[in-house]
Length: 224
Image (cartoon, rainbow, N blue to C red; front, side, top):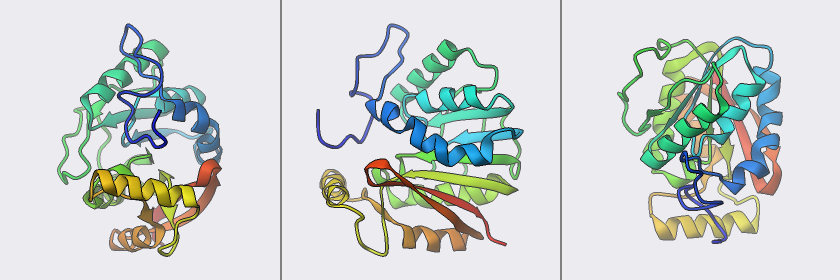
């Protein structure tokens, strides 16, 4: 297996007959990420968008733990959308909506007919997306958060990040170099740049939670 994984279509075990993909990263990070989400989500009511659901494993697991929240899976990749739908059917949870194609770089992305109205999402969760996408995807994510979240809502972003231009570990520096070699528009993002982007959208970095293997969860809220 390659040292760094940037997509889930061809990693882990082969798809099950129903099309479910299994990402090794899910098994490593499902509990650490949950430790950051749990204080805000448990016992709450509302709707949560997962922007970039990958295989679909995270969303069905977190939906199982938060039965009073309705979760909306999305992704850009058709293979991922197939896997998400397979995991949704396998989990058979009433609080997981049908997956839909979401291109965050497109400002006017198509909303499912029954998707919550702008300004009514309780949370948005986005894991392992910003570093394998052009910067305009980060711009689209922050714009979507500003438009879609409730006043008390939160945006949770998981992945590797730089701090004030510096990598937090040599492995992240190598990862960044490998990403940029594959696509010049990719790369590990700097928290300082995301703070600037948040301010442009009347948002702020509310908290930063340390994760294993030199990853972080950034928690963003509306400014003020």
